[in-house]
Length: 324
Image 1 (cartoon, one colour):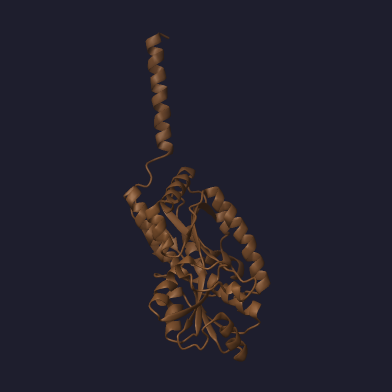
Image 2: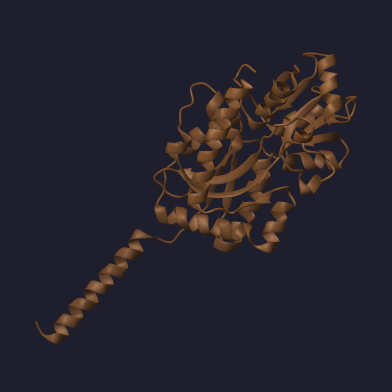
């Protein structure tokens, strides 16, 4: 073979390799993406998802459509996400609520660890114990005393049976030796609305969803469920200041059905982590009450394993079941 023919053959081979590489990793995204959430419009996951969708649109010029599918504490959203093709155009927001539900609801048709690949942990956030303005209790200690004086008469709302808010209430009654009636709703907004209307006396709501009612004076915030106070409402104590050992935490992460191409998972993870660490966007999230994380995929994997272990232990200790 002549030198010229050899060079031509080499060039052709190089072109084939470049073309193959291009075929292996096509332009992404080149169409809108669906982000499925298991909570109602106006809930914490909905608020955070829409903020994230707006930020990623600026990077990719592609819409991220937030698809709210509330019900069964997020289980409906997981089942829907798993029916989608794992092509990178369907994401799901995995929250503490859905992880709790997977431990307390019967007949779950999915395995979160097996069926969903990690993308990034966006941030963590406490829940807030909110009470109706007519409720006599103005502190956690007064609420405990009121509940003990009226066993079974106080009603508390949550985002649904098996939701993190439900578990927050179960843990509270378990550690304080009180009895309250759980009233499940299909989402946090409904629970908040009925607390304002005094259909239930109190509810647990994730901080972003609770802020408007607190700032508007429609509900009283008695405590946050994290061990530390939330900077956004620093005057509201941690429940653990009165109830030792009390802690529940909400968190927001993005996952995709297992089988989604690795290069897509890597690209989305890198962009999400970059976005939340930008000063302007990070401050926007902090303004919603989040402690910003922006993890790698491996870090979210480790976080999910730790949370799975912790929540399984918490559910066992608290006795939380679908009948609570």
